[in-house]
Image (cartoon, rainbow, N blue to C red):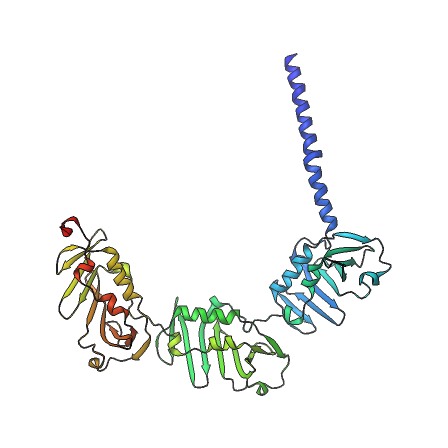
Length: 453
């Protein structure tokens, strides 16, 4: 009997659990989902399902079609690449649009809601061949809602008024506004041609090399910033969709040309910048027809000199590789050696424990030196810059070899002339390096109990 009673109780508990699950948990959740589905204005579940978008206004129409690769293209009233992010935002807003309240079961008096001549009509073509249409009329008296209806349904309902604002677009809003479309990671060569100057830089492995006007290492970070600015630049206005001549805009003999070679096949991308209009400049991308306006701020950032794009690093070495440092002054020499544990020891003029952080700071100061100016590319007349008898020589060793030697010469107007072993170039750098390297033994030794006594 006890076993049967237990079994009966268990069965009752299971039944109660199933009841609670279906009627108290699952059913309300399904009802809520069903209610939300009924409120949805459009029945597509993903923006990928939309193949065409048309926005119809009282005085214009804009039609966008999706390309096989998922990007958008304007197909009316002009044919040009679309702004994928801008169009996708519209589709996402429509996907999430939900009717707030039905205000009329019949659309007999459309003029009452501004729906006889709507502010905007939204037409969607879905990929499976169906179409869907939404009309948006006047805003409610409070301005919080907009009256709307679907062509295939008689009811008039309200939607949040921000949806109407999000659909009030111009051709400019929805077209591709990039000044030059390219993948920055794929750029292999860069040329900046101005009227009396031509700079050519080529990517070699992970680095950039300047080829013209001189052969030298280029500044990878500066080129990266240049390409980022160019990639993100937007046209301020499209002036002429089908120009009969570029001469009118000074683009037949431009004040500047920026050419990129992109990808393994080195496809060419060319941007021309011509005459000035007010504060902006006419510009033209070789791959498409329109003449557009580029902002003065962009023009300023594109006007690079060879100095801007060349590598300004003075000393090339890796700090962690250095195991010996010599600081040579006219009256003394300080030598520090890194031991097997990675700690620095002073070996000359005294043998003491050195401050590791101090040595790291010295090496960091030398590695961080950047040229303010390049005096000459060839070593001539060192005495002119007092580099034949430098006030400081910093010699860096890796294992048993000198990998870098910095000569610090004459100071002048807050700067100082320097030269390295690795380069024949004479540099001008900030004279802070003189103070950084003008050290005494007591500046470098670690204080111990014995040294304090």
